[in-house]
Image (cartoon, rainbow, N blue to C red; front, side):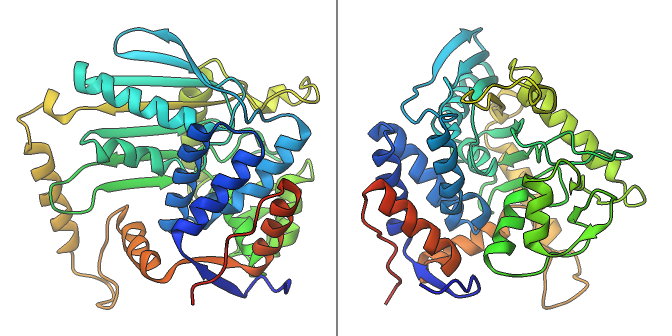
Length: 371
């Protein structure tokens, strides 16, 4: 196939899900856990979050072959305090344990009004927003944070990276509008979005990444080197510069680290890097909070007020009549409808890597384009 990352084919979501499933099972993941993981990864692609869907398979293969990721792991609950719990991910991929934790938090919220579940000893769990969507699908408010294994964020006033992208997601159900779902990295942009730009051979917007002197890096491949290979440079906190309030993104990243990592007893990657031995798991931590609106007010009144607030946002006079005001979650909902019709784009550069993964795993390549 051509190495031109700008050329993409459109593939039905069912094929994307099945491709992920077959690869994960070939790597040794149990069928039930692989189904959960493949479903969440395909849902991520369907929402248009290309940086965290099937494009993650190359990174997972690398960790699996290095022995730092246990695909045969099955999480276990190690503490249960009624409205709270702690789950040990046992060094496995983060999707199954994160889905388990969010659903457990929702169960507790439906019983107690509030449910909080932390996860330790996990790995990357994809896009945080898919777990907030689990909460809103079940009619409750959800908050998700996570620590990160990669040390790629340079803190405000710093010269070296000390934090990861440390995501935050928040979801709230409405009655007739799309639910409000905020899903954000605490860096100006997620590292995997830089990866997508690299796949597509596109230049980065200035301010996403910096070199060892703090100067902007716009070449996607060079930015990938600073983010993943060089000890200096990396991603900026949300805001980009001190003048643009990057201290807020830095503070949010710390909050996500505290809830996702410190509360669960998981590793602080910047400190652990110096002592981590080969083959040790990433020990990423996650945090899931669920709030049942019916525990605070009359049933259905929260959703009604959510609709009223969202409608008010929609009624805001737009700066450009061609671009009406939206709320978080609506662009992803619209993209989902479009991709259900037209398929999920697979850039040629990613397709080449997935072909190699399938060949090494002994599984067929299933991502034939739509006719």
